[in-house]
Amino acid sequence: MAHKIFLSHNHKDKFLVEPVALRLKEIFGQDQVFYDSWSIQPGDSIIEKIDQGLESPEFLFLFATQNSLASGMVKLEWQNALFAASKEKTRIVPVRGDGSEMPSILKQTMYVDMYTNGIEAAITTIVNVIHGNASFTPQHQGFSNLAYSQLLNEDGSVEITIRASHLFEPNPEFSFVLANVVLANLENDIKWGMKNDAPIMSSTGTYSHPTSGTSAAVMMRPIGASLAPNLPLTFVFSKKAEAFINIIGVSHKKGENNFVPVPLAQS
Image 1 (spheres, rainbow, N blue to C red):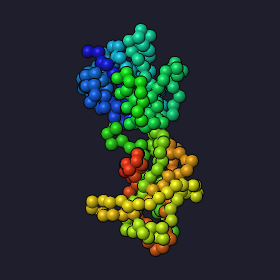
Image 2 (image 1 turned 120 degrees about the vertical axis):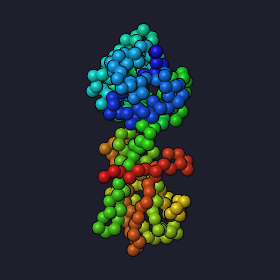
Image 3 (image 1 turned 90 degrees about the horizontal axis):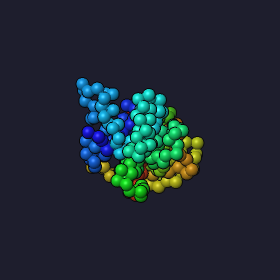
Image 4 (image 1 turned 90 degrees about the vertical axis):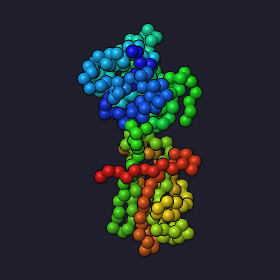
């Protein structure tokens, strides 16, 4: 049976591809989406199944990354799709998954920029493309592009470094929750900012947790700084008084009044 949608990717990039596959499965049905994790079963011939999946799908989404562009199998998939596209049977849509340069033959093709816009916006664009909706509206389950680490210095100050693993983050604004600090005393007890005194915008508020109660929170957004792979951001909290600095959570602002927890990096 011919599939409507073929997801061409390297297995190392499944954390990027699987959220797309699951969303397309919900909308169009599993039988319309060729995704190797469910389209190829134990005992199946991999080449035969891929050949069946490439029987003129309406859409082939090429997840272009350093891994996939170096893969002979992925190259074979999209080159076969180019032949079908020349007969107006298949539409090839590249999905930019990292900073790699697109193959020359595909540079004239408009691509979905997951690297710049993030996974959720990319999924929306992909669904719109399949539906034939030209308008643009700006989850491997549990995947987080961000993670943070803590460093306690000898003087009692704490450095929080936030890193992006794969994708550029367009809004690097974060909330830091401090335990055992009263909001009214926050500015008297603690100083905060960016490492190397880079300029920021900041504000304070409270965070309510069902078990730990209400804690003070500091919101910070760097001015003119980007958060991207190989460009982490480091925030510094230092003591003005004897209070022990205990940061119990970091969240990323994804929208108005919408903060998403950033996981602690695995050591």
